[in-house]
Image (cartoon, rainbow, N blue to C red; front, side, top):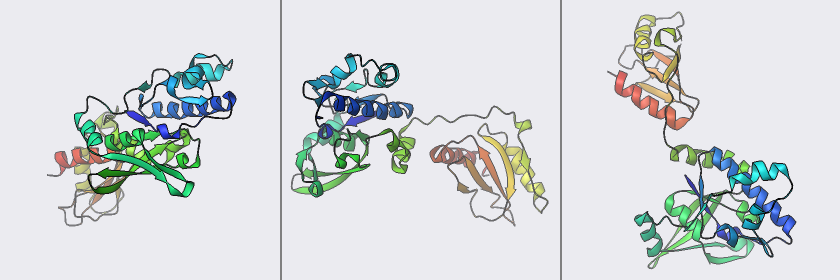
Length: 283
């Protein structure tokens, strides 16, 4: 996955020391991005064109030894080789066409930021990606940036998710965006079906629920189960981001139910496992 550099956020610091601090924060942000699956920053500018201070670029910061082991060995590596140009993926003809056919601008009247063409933000919008900004001004410390899109005589607005620090990746909208843009790789349980546990309370429906469990436990994505309050008109009553799914014997008179624990680690994975279980067992 790729982040898109918001080049409008580049603002030269008063001196190289402050410029270096900006670079360190940027690298930490990218370090967290890497842990989330991002490998590239698509940019209109190369490292040598990103000015952190007078006569001091991001490239200078990368190649000059600071003497700080933490910065040199842990922080800087996250920025080596991550920048790629141009700001629009040339292999994506639809993206190129969308950019050519419209004009994209950013403006913030509250902070007197004038209407300005935005390359990185437009790229993020078109690619449905996330922009990464240097937090040089308060407007770049927002986790959602609004751009203006002009096409012929039509004017519209677009929303772009934005990160400016490592903490931004805890934002719920950012987390959901990443969740649904990563490759979906479902994990299978290492527990054998005969060793999977199901706790049934002493009420009616144990026979029916045990029969259901004997089928469900054969799924490699099911870990365990317990009986819960009955009721529901569909096989899957509810899914949760922690991997739990509520299953209902909706064709039975009392609509007995099980809460099963699956290998899902987020809402997207759990929903996908639920689809698999419906297809296989809702018969």
